[in-house]
Length: 93
Image 1 (cartoon, rainbow, N blue to C red):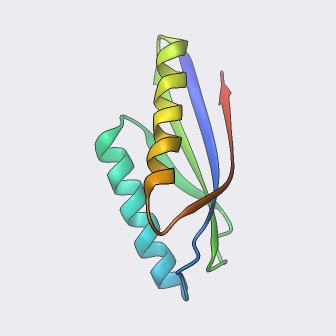
Image 2 (cartoon, rainbow, N blue to C red):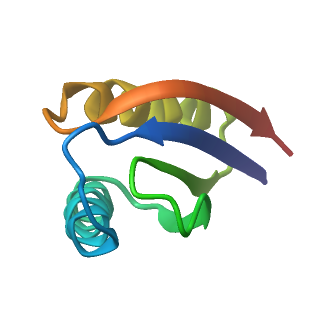
């Protein structure tokens, strides 16, 4: 069993309130959950309007599959118009 963990630090340039930030993050989280078989949660910068950190995990019996899924997720997040990735890290357990 392989567990993949992806932490993404996001910059949200168009947000001017926590309500706007939550709306964008809810959209991102629901789109990713519908496309990929993952668990996702907001983990950091909870009170910041312009930044967020999300954590994503996926599980499989194949390590290459986990690597591929996590890289697809990063590319998908990069394609969203209202979001910029500041940094991300992956880990396999």
